[in-house]
Amino acid sequence: MKKKDGAIARPAMVSAGRPLKRRIMDNWQLYAMLLVPVVLTVIYKYIPMYGIQIAFRDFKASKGMWGSEWIGLEWFERFFSAPTCWRMIKNTLLLSFYSLLWGFPIPIILALMLNQLRFRRFKRATQTVLYAPHFISTMVICGMIRIFLSPSGGLINLIAGTSIDFLTESSAFRTIYIASGIWQDAGWGIIVYMATLANVDTSLYEAAKVDGASMFQRILHIDVPQLSSIMVLNLIMSAGGLMNVGFEKVWLLQTDLNKAASDVIAVYVYQQGIENAKYSYSTAVGLFNTAVNIVLLMAVNKMASKISEDTSFV
Amino acid sequence: MNYVRANVKAGRPTGFSERASDIVLVVICAAILFIVAYPLYYVLVASVSDPYDVYAGKTFLMPSRFTMDGYTAVFADPGILTGYWNSIKYTVVGTVFSVVMLYLSAYPLSVKNLPGRKWISIFFIITMYFGGGLVPTYLVVKHTGLINNMWALFLPGGVSVGNMIIVRNFFENSIPKEMVEAAEIDGASQWETFIRIVVPLSRSIMAVMVVFSMVAYWNDWFTSMIYLPGTERAPLSLVLRNILIKSSASASQASTISGGYAELNKLTEMIKFSSIIVAAAPMLIAYPFVQKYFEKGFMAGAVKG
Image (tube, rainbow over all chains, first blue to last red; front, side):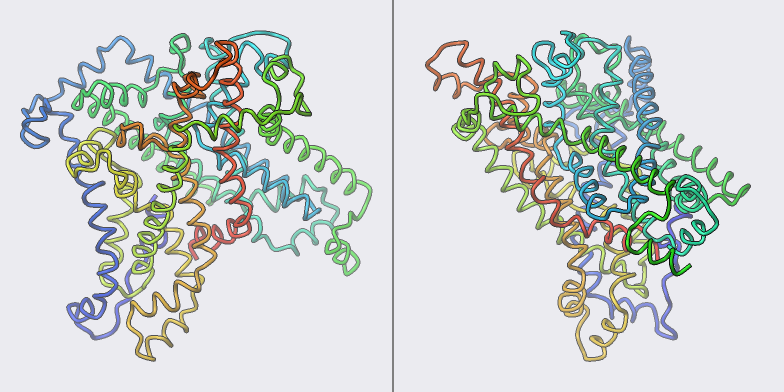
C-alpha cells in the first residue's frame, strides 16, 4: 500500500548546510499548526489502540483499562464457542464479498458509458442525479427500504401485485442490502473514474475513429487501460475491508426473522459492547475482526504487486 | 482529419453506427436515471398525497388528494423540531471545526522541506488502516468527559485523514510555488503565507471539504446514539429512527390527534414520507452547487502529482 502512495515515500528535501535544529526552529509556526490535530489523534486514535489490551484483560471499571486483571485468550475462546460465531463470520464475509462482486464493476461500467456521452448537458444532469443518493443518510435510506418493501402498500409489492414481507425473509436480506447499496453508492463511485478518464488525450479517440474503431473498441482499447491502475487500487482497498461490513445498515434492516443472513460481527460488537457493556468481550471480537482484515489486506496487496510485476498491469 | 475533429468538437455523430451507438447509450443512461431518481420522486409524491391512496397504489406518478398535513405534523412535532435544530447546530460547528483541523494538518505536511514531514504523515495515515475499535474508543471518550457533550461528535473524528491527504495533495499540486516563495521573500511569516495566500487560493477544495463535512455531520446518527444518549440532544436522523424504523408515533403526536387510532395511524404513515423529504432535502439542495469542484478536487487531490 505504502509503496503506492508517492507522497509518503517522497523524502523531505534537505536545505543545504543548515543544521536540523535550526530548520526545526525556522518552521515552528508549521509545527504549531499541527499541534491540535496531533494531540487529538494521540488521544482519540492512539490511546484506544493501546486500550485494545482490554481484550486480554477482565476489564473492571473500578480498576481501569491498565489495571484490570490479565486473563489471556479467554474472551476469544468464548467467542469461538458462541453458538452464532460461525454464522456471523460467514454472514460478514458473504455480505461483503457479494457487495464487492456487484459493487466494484458497476461504477466502472457507468463511468465508461457516461464518458462516451456527447451531449454535455445530459451528461452533466445524469451525473448530478447519480450522485444524489450518496448524500442521503443511511437512516433515511433504510426508512425508504422499509417503506418500499412493506407487505401492505409498499411500492415493490404494489408493482408486483404481491404482499410479501421481504424483511422477514432471510433469503432476501443479502439482495436487499446489496441492491440498495448499489443504488446509493454506485453513482458516487464513478467520480474517481470520471476524473481519470478526463485526463485521456482526446487525439487518441480521433485517431481511433479515423481508423474505424467502434465505440466499444475505443472504450476497450483506450479507456480501460487508463483505468486499470486505479481499478487495482480500489480493488485492493475493498478487498482489505472485506470484514468491514458497515454496522449501520445491517442493524437498521435487521429483524428477528432475517437474522440467519443478517447476523454480522459488527452488530454483535455493538450489542455486546455498548448495549450489554461487556467491554472486554466486545473488544476481543472487534480485534479478531480487525486481525482478519489486516491479513486479507496484506494478502491482496501481495497478490496485486505480483500481478503488476508480471504483467506491468499497474 | 480536420473534418473529423470539427465534428467531434461540435458533438455531432460522424456516421450511422456512431449515431446508433449514441442512441443506445442515451437510452441506457435514461433508464439508469429513472432507476436512481424514481424512488426519490415516489417519496416526494407520496408525501403530499392521502396515505390511503398511497397504499392503494394511486400515486405512482402524480399526487392523489393533495395534502400538506404530513409536513404540518412534522413541523408541529417538538421532537423533530429539536432534532432539526440539533442537526443544524452539530453540522455548523462540526463543519467549521473539521475544515479548520483539515487545513491546519494538511498545510504543514505539504511543505516539502519540513523536517519530520514523512513521519508525521505516517503517524496520521496509520489511523486510516488501524484503530482501537468501538469499545476502547468509547471508553476514552467517556474518560475525557464527553458523554452527553456535543464535542464527542467532533473531537474523536475531527481529523479526517482521507480528506487531509486530498487537501495536502491539492496544496502541493495547485498552489503556485512562486507565490509562496514571493510572500516569504517579502518577509511574510509562514502563518501569514498560509492565511493570505494558501487559504484564498484553495477555495475550490475548501468548498468540496465543507460539503463533505456537512453531509457527514448532517447524516450521522450512530455517533450521537452512543455518545449523546439524552433524547433532547438527538439529531434529526436519530429522531427519525423512531418514526421510520420503529414505526412508532411520538407521544406528542398522539396527544394532538383527536380522531382516534385510525387517524393517528394515518398521520404516522404520512409523517414517514414527509420526514424523509425534510431530512434529505438540505443536502440534496446543497451538493449540486459544488458538484463542479468534485472532479477538479479529486483530480488535484487524488492524483499524486
